[in-house]
Image (cartoon, rainbow, N blue to C red; front, side, top):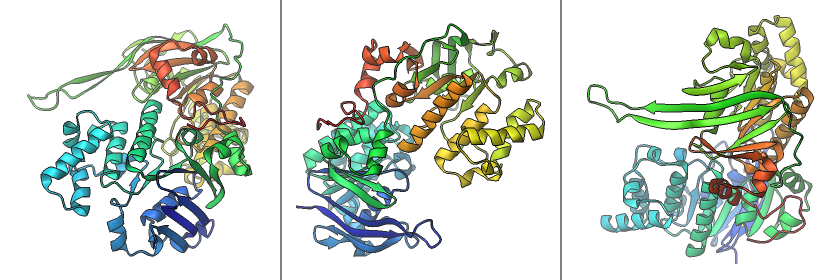
Length: 544
């Protein structure tokens, strides 16, 4: 028996869009106590399908043009707004991808949960408080009483997501929609949230519609899978069947792009050291009383006694969760942040104490590719000028620099005509290619890539990783690759340094670290990788 049935759903886009429908002729069904994963890349229509169920489409520009969303005999696509307000939260709830934007920043967590009860249920104040405390305890939040009085910004990402799950399950809804609820979370927190959703689903007999682009998550949590492409459901079936023998070419291509957890064969290690980092320290300080006022002084040791070396043509991966210090180390190496102590030796010179003028000759030798291609490119500057600016500052003539920019655009797989366009005219993957071209314009010896693919779809991620590898080979580059994704690290990195709380807790060849980790934290990271028992491309899959 279906709890939710989506039939021939068409979601119309505004006139002038690239296609008439964001979702076209979609058919899906969800049974009680079942987890259906809807998988697809950006623009596939999976999130809009979920929002159509909730009645949260951005009307009137985007709306259901045809089809039905049947929930227990009622077509939600035709339901009035007043009826949808009654249904949302009480019978169908949603966990959003980014809890910081979904939670009210000026209300405590307790008041936000209380609001759900006050709107939908006739309960006394004490009863509502007791129920809220129990919900926070059920989702394994520490000290529920303290969490009740906390504001969203006072919680970690994982704690905010748990609070959202508590709110979503407050009234025992029959359907829970989870829209990429673990995308922004660290791997161990992600594993905890997936386990929690399964626990809550079993306890409440809830049907879960789980939106994701991560096949590792699918392998861990799904009973059935539906794959969407360009607004259409192109394949659907039991998880074991889809993961072991996908039929549609798009599904096959998505799975082929998922990095394997088996590290690639090790390359010979050069004796030539390009970069050495010795005993690096970085402390962030905040607060401090002024005339007896203000918050107490606080110190965070973001990097503590970090020692690393990078050889010619080698890719060194620095892995760890948020707050481990890996991005701080990267930014200290390229001198975007000033380290408090230690040495950063490049070409025999210690970069750490150098002033701006003395540092300039070394700037060209070490360049960075940033995590967010949206934020790292000037939106008001044409792409060609963005790429050419570095060489011009270093003394190259404008004509030479522009010619080089056109050549680099070709190298990173973009048409040279992109030279005169602005960043907003490109997709996320194309913007990241532009970021790579800008970093290569100065012909660096060392490329520092800080989570360069974490914001990209799996197929685009695969393209960027292959591009970086090709460029590293062609230019004999040395690379520091920052990531929290161990699947990516396995396929990109020759060596790994695992960081926790600002310290390197384990270092070694990637294959060695994966095969026999020595530190408990490394073991925990490897154990928490989504779908670790599933190997992309294999014809067998053991259901979880």
